[in-house]
Length: 343
Image (cartoon, rainbow, N blue to C red; front, side, top):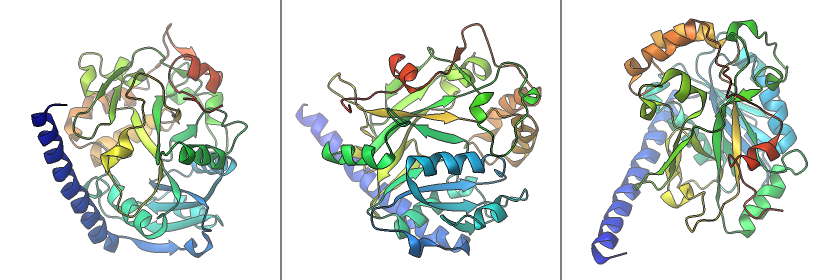
């Protein structure tokens, strides 16, 4: 690295340091939008692994989401309910390992819920490994079927790592979306068992040094003409949290930026996981019309009108190139996750 490159890098680090402070200040101010519903955080033990999530009308997904991540080893969940009217808040309040806050303020103006979660993580997650997830994301990683999260984070700490990356993998059924019935507590991957395996574009962002990954069925089906507008699929969902940390864009990137280096920059492979994305359950057809009107899920919501319109037409996302999910070893062999030396 030349002298000018070093100076530019120092200047960027300085700007990002101030950006992180501004994000933490935003979270401090947004704390006033949260009302406690059920605060069980006194039950959190020193070595507990936590999970944090903002939800709205996710009553059907939550039983499987909670059971799966409990089985992995999450001991306490921090939830923000953003105006649900389907029984989500009532269900969560009954769970003994859940602490719940409520707000009806704008999801979009809270940086898509990140400001609220940053405050809760500042208060309750310092020193803990913490998952930051949406309710439609199910974490898997190498050996997840036989080794708990506690084993993974112990190994990460021995490697000197404080963060763990994952590819968000859109799962979908074969046939029209509305035809695939789903009941609360069912395994969603009995029907959402297909994915696109070979159309991913990856680049490293020079400022935050995170991987910007696009592809999957959404890029193929909804953004064919402009794939660079497709949602980004790379995330850093698992972090050994410190109250000085802050996510920048959902769980796609965070500060300090060293936490985004969840890949091996020397040409090898770092251990990584996959977030199986259950967005395309049958309810997405009806909810897409509502979300188009609410305009709460994308920074430039009008650009995604055609995306929502397409979903309301109840499409069949399957194609001849679709791949059926068989397990994490299959995803590793396809290069979508990696053991990265964890054996």
